[in-house]
Amino acid sequence: MKILQVHNYYKNYGGENEVFKSEVAVLRQGGQEVITYTEDNRRIDKMNSLVLAAKLIWSNESKHKLLRLLNKEQPDIVHFHNIFPLISPSAYYTCKKLKIPVVQTLHNYRLLCPAAIIFRDGKICEHCLKTILPWPGVLRACYRSSHLQTAGVASMIAIHRWLKTWQKQIDIYIALTKFARDKYIEGGLPEKKIVIKPNFINSDPGMERKTKSYVLFAGRLSQEKGIAILLQAWKKLKGIPLKIAGDGLLKQKMEQFVRENNIQNVEFLGTVTHDKVIDLMKKAYCLALPSQWYECFSVTIIEAFACGTPVITFPLGAMLELIRPGETGVFLKSRDPQDIALCIEWAWKHPEQLERMGKMARLEYEIKYNAKNNYELLMEIYNKAIKVNNCNI
Image 1 (cartoon, one colour):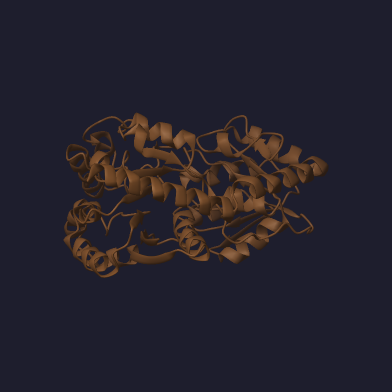
Image 2 (cartoon, rainbow, N blue to C red):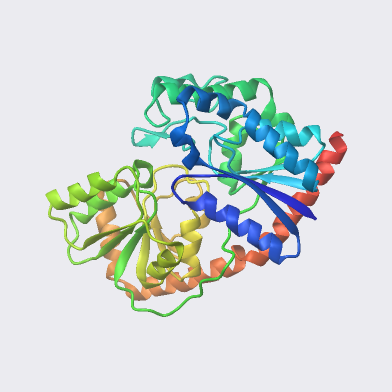
């Protein structure tokens, strides 16, 4: 099978970029012919904001690039990951015009929410979920704290809801968990077109027995990821080291918070390579991931599982399906920093239980999130999309 994989890279390297690379690799390892079409958001810094707003609704540039590639390569199927903002929904119409099946992975909630995370001002926000025009997001400047930029994203969502792009131009959607699938159905996507396939790790990092000497936070330093409440909890902890791998809008603010409150044993590592993150996980006592939004699927969690590292997190969104409390990790009881501190302290004082959870987490990875299983699921989905497309021709 010849497969075209399409992705608009984010400025900051994250889970979606990693999944795109992993799926391209696993398909090639399985003997499939894979070609790629990518854009990179580093381009948008030089663009006029009005031009960019027009592109995210309908990009003629991307449409013509893709059309040339499709005519040249004639793939059997096109699999989209992120199309925002440089590729745009015009790409779907280009594929359908040539009668090529379309698959779209739902990595986030962009088709329902201008901010893509259903989260605002420190809490879950579903105000735009069922509105034709996501005007609440525009009023609150949910995307990049800009009314103008949010209006651009909201217009894209509204126009393509009105055109029924999401219903007619995609043959199969891939949701990463049942929770995310249900949320998208609630937001208006066609139930019969959404299948579930989890993320995975293409290259097994292996579970090595190393000295566990700290708690690890690995991810974007932003409000929805819970870094602020984690550090508030660390004010109440003594003698437990925390390593923070990642960057983001809150990095300087969090570093200042640590200094002003004289919080000990906290080390900011900044942006690190993927290999370094894996090495950090192998040496971590546990992964602290106090995300406050409906994570679609955190690749960081299954990376921790693969390394035999249990996870401490909130019972929200995908976490309810990924974590088995007491077996592969621990659920936090509340957002109260005192409760979080007590949970971390308990974990630190019970190494035998944490080691047992780590072994169970590793088993969970081996059963559910390995490359072989994911390859087989992908091929099943592609064959289904081809059948659906043929029925609609």
